[in-house]
Amino acid sequence: MFLNQLKKRNEKLLETAFELHQSGRIDPDSYVIDVDTFTENAKKISEKAKECGITLFFMLKQVGRNPWLAERLMELGFAGAVTVDYREARVMMRHNIPIGNVGHLVQIPSRQVPEIVAYGPEYITVYTKEKAAEIHQAAEKLGKTQKILLRVTGEGDMMYSGQTAGFAMEELEETADWIRKNCGNVRIAGVTSFPCYLYDEKAGEIRPTHNLKTVLESADRLEKTGIRCGLINTPSASCCATFEQMVKYGGNCAEPGHSLTGTTPLHAVKDQPEIPCCVYVTEISHNFEGLGYCYGGGYYRRSHVANALVGKSLGESEMLSVIPPECESIDYHFGLSKTCRVGDTVLMAFRYQIFVTRSDVVLVKGIQSGNPEIIGVYDSQGRQK
Image (cartoon, one colour):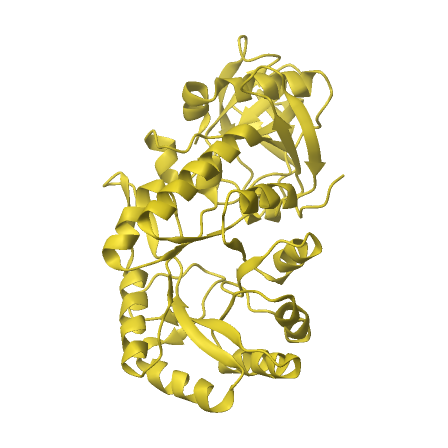
């Protein structure tokens, strides 16, 4: 999906990935991240967001919840992490990374609410009254007030399978009134939904979804009841190209994730300020019935993987078609469109979510200056190896 853009805009990353694998310094099933380009992307995103008056919470699940990258983002002025679930929250907590928002797609489990409330996230997203009550109880014991965001949903909204949840917009006033009466140690501070923006393949650009309309109408409803919605959180596909739209429509909080590595669907088809800086590295395992097979482990069902570079160096590599494993199968291997030399390097660049894989994450600096240096190898859950 992103190989052509990498060849065009970050060829040094591809050269480095071949060299690191062929020299035995990295294993198959590794994602290599060019941290200098990652940092430059983050600077561009931060500067554009400041220009537009948008708060940024960074999302790092896609790069394996990596704490080293989180620390760099905090140094660049991001407001904190958005943790997709309680496991990611714990990674950030172990490394003293401020949490901007937790609980959006996955609510905090009941037994973990006191621990996370005590840590002090700026916002906790809720989509049930029961969870609001649990947060209230934990905050009450600590003598504090916890700000919460309401995840809202309306007719016509899009929801991915496995993410179905939210307060119905027609019940919003009643819900808010119940929380105010029964949860004195929480304060409704805003609204959110997902996804509020998505790449439109026909238009060739990122456009708002119906969910954004629901978020904005929900904020207006709450304002009329006397609740000030200071945060209008409108995530998905957050990048320099979407921030002016956010200002236009009324959102004021974004959650850049794939834009940090230049890998939103928009980046695959159009040059953007952010440059692709992540590549998947593996190795030819064997051949079978006229096809080559490389080691897997990093497959994501929505990856849209199509092609791979195969060889011992970029200069002598060949572009082959990839045959991904079927969704009902474990990704022990990827297939390739012809037989290959066993031991050759295989590079792919696709839509990835490292936290759901068993891959390594290899952070490399100095790629652009011609002096690559591995600064850390992590597992898919942010633990250094």
